[in-house]
Amino acid sequence: MSAIIIENGLAHYEAIGRGRPVILIHGWIGSWRYWVPTMDDLSDRFRAYAIDLWGFGDSDRRSAGYTLPSYIGLLRQFMNEMGIGRAPLVGHALGGVIALRFAAEMPERVEQVMAVSTPLDGSALARSLTGFSGNDNDVAGRILGRRQVAAYPEVQLEAGKTDSNAIVHSVRAVMEQNLWRELDSLEIPLLLVHGIDDPVVQPPREEWVQQYEENMRAIYLEDSRHFPMLDEVNKFNRLLRQFMELKDDLDSLELKEEWRRRTR
Image 1 (tube, rainbow, N blue to C red):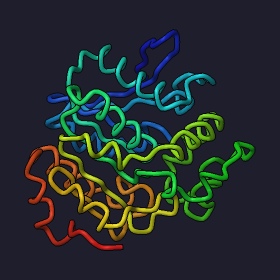
Image 2 (spheres, rainbow, N blue to C red):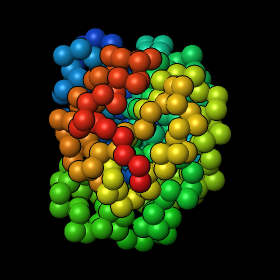
Image 3 (cartoon, one colour):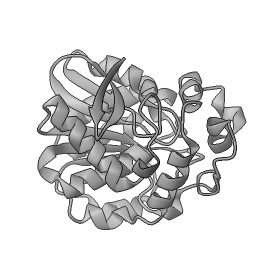
């Protein structure tokens, strides 16, 4: 287990591989652990870092740290501690919101962003999240639905460590966001990835995304739900590697039939 002290709190992270750095940020359900297949795949060419946010996994519970500014500060200081000046960010759900906000506030530190299952405004969140009160010990079952949880043992295992207040407060913060406005200021390559059958975050309509096509693409995976990195491991990893290599040439991501875009 690897950890560093940030603002007098213990922040847990893991790192795999050698090469260019890339940072992976988890979402509301789980921790760094569900990134392991992605980290393993990238490890031949990248140094993949995955950090637990405050209140999740093995990082400290900090009642005052469950805000977007606090999480953005955590990411900034983590990069400073690791000696990472600039890197691609891969964020899932809450992690995607943090990655986009971080890129909008500190574009000089972000090469590109893959935002996975990320709500661009509060209306994209399912009632299982917006109505979560923190009174249920089965965090994963309450949000995903108990029938779906069995498909994600790595998520269910780590979800039990979550401080429910971290979910409640960060969901409220995201409900007040409109990331479409942030997209206007972003000039870096941005890839949105969504599972068609996501029960937690509603994917954005394609016509909305088309307004930002100079530097952004959206790809919808037909056999994925909320965790594309686990639902379609090989396809997700190939897509991420291609995105990391192509950088500005996002049009090429649409050429393969299995990655075709689909209108909701």
